[in-house]
Length: 150
Image 1 (cartoon, rainbow, N blue to C red):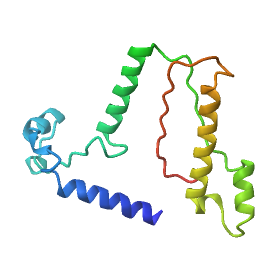
Image 2: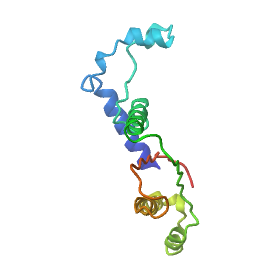
Image 3: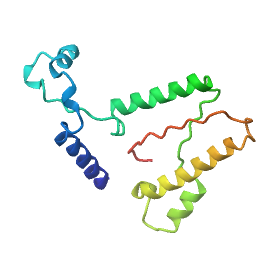
């Protein structure tokens, strides 16, 4: 978890130090502050704008939403909404951690994430095969990056 926090800190530090390169100066800071209801003039001009490339930022979420809505316009509303979650009692995960005494799934999120991705890809390929639901026009998937314990 420390490595993840260090990476996030580095990414945010880069964004904070490169606001001019990220074209955040085109935003009207005072208008933005007034529209948000800020009465403290000390905060005006001190905001850091997170770009849409920063996973989890408001702009990132808005872009994902707009992409999903464009797909709905093109192909119609979705017929299914499937949630796929990880289970630490999957045989593959249990087998992997039985082979490594002293480790728990929360100690090695890289292994759990890799197994989750493999199972997710298998499920998507199964759906694409047309066997369970028939031929699909489009498949849209979203993987939130939750940094939580299993």
